[in-house]
Image (cartoon, rainbow, N blue to C red; front, side, top):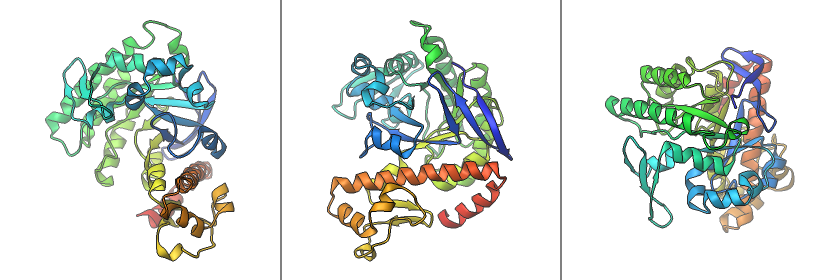
Amino acid sequence: MKLHIDIEATDGAARVGTVRTARGQFNTPVFMPVGTRGTVRAVTTADVERLGAEIILGNTYHLMLRPGADVIADLGGLHRFEDWSGHMLTDSGGYQIFSLSPKVTDDGATFRSTYDGSTHRVTPEDAVRIQELLGADIQMVLDVCTALPAHRRELQAAVDRTAAWAARARVAHGATDESITQRQALFGIVQGGTEADLRAESAQRTVELDFDGYAIGGLSVGEERDVMLPALEAAVAHLPADQPRYFMGLGDPIGIVEAVARGVDMMDCVLPTRLARHGTLLTDGGKINIKRAEFVRSDEPIDAACACEVCSRYSRGYLRHLVSVSEPTGATLATQHNVAWLLAFMDRIRDAIRTGRLDALRSEVAAVWS
């Protein structure tokens, strides 16, 4: 199902829009909380729904291993399994697979389970079939995600193999049940490391395959922002303006606003939830480590400007106590706050685009988060 984005407002290359799907629609730019193993860690889908998230992620690598894609299919697919009525996107598992140093051939990747050491092989066709069983609204092709820095020969090989695998995924999607393509979109992924010409080549080759949407993968993996952004620009320049553009694995405020300024519509990351579980909270004044002794007797909210339930009910002193004694409720409340803060940050970005103030917001964010 080819996804189109209806543009409501622009500010330079940035745009506010609506993506329409078989399930309904979601607003962009959008941040998507990550639910790796069938839930956003430390919170429930009811929590995430109440916080206002429109789309969340599931991780194919973890879910195919436990409980298994067939189990989830038998239980009604990911939406019913998690009791989530919003939109859902599943990644192909490529990033996790390649972080395990798999044996890769032109046919696919062989890797060991992080759970029990068992050996598994995934081909581009397998990744499609597994995600069809999971039943998300959007699935991703299996790609080759290269660690950076990398030699140009390695990056070119990754671009070539990703393109070949993408073509196979395109054929496999809906091959056994054509109706799947009417309810589940398939996104292609652009690779190429930080080489602008390879990014452009990968984008062009991916677009030629006519996917339902497009993602930029293999960036924000530790490289400096001044080399990441030109690579992003090179890719976006060749992606269709009327379809959604997704930056995979991006979650820091500066990165988000800079990507949006270059025409990105969707992004996801485990960063806000991972930080929360370790006691780092996002605020309009930057990050704070709630474990610090200065907060022992603080009766202030985490962020006075935040309208979330955690900030309206609980003090910094209380959150510090919960996190310091490893009380699970501390992780839950911290996660709720960080997700709420980041979703509100996306509201600010959309408002800035509508009012032509995105450059001013970029400056404000850089001053706080640099």
